[in-house]
Image 1 (tube, rainbow, N blue to C red):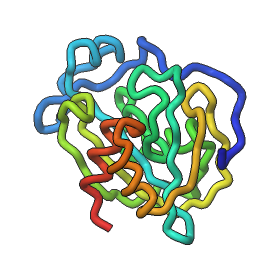
Image 2 (cartoon, rainbow, N blue to C red; image 1 turned 60 degrees about the vertical axis):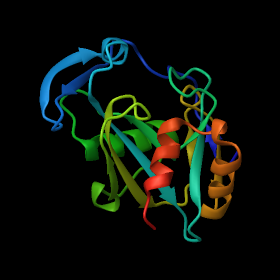
Image 3 (cartoon, one colour; image 1 turned 45 degrees about the vertical axis):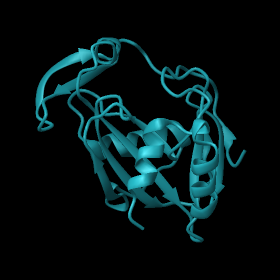
Image 4 (cartoon, one colour; image 1 turned 135 degrees about the vertical axis):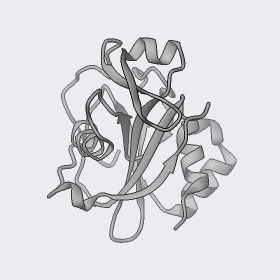
Length: 179
């Protein structure tokens, strides 16, 4: 593992509140996490890819406690946008919560890719950000069971040869990134 592990905690709560959005990503209501997922309502999420000076990408292996894609590799951090929160604030929060990465400011995050809701994203509008950050990281064990730096070529081969090892949302993101 390429990071220290924080003390425990929970991976997610069924009672978290999310904004429910329409097909244009406009807020139309709020609902509990459990209800949003059970009813497949549109909502919002972020993914952040941390790159080091050599261009490697830090990937996390999701905790077995996660309710989606447990034990699978994913972006450096990812998470839902809380009710009333915007995408950028959620990305900054998730970086800190999941891998202990604190930024000098949100200006360090570069918007990279936007995805429309679909099966692979769990009906989430997703903003993907990138940031130059070489760690060190402190991994939250309820969220992440492992982490590793990988080159783009290594990730390409792994996603091609063992797609089942990666979260579906990450496979979709990886296939759409323009370097």
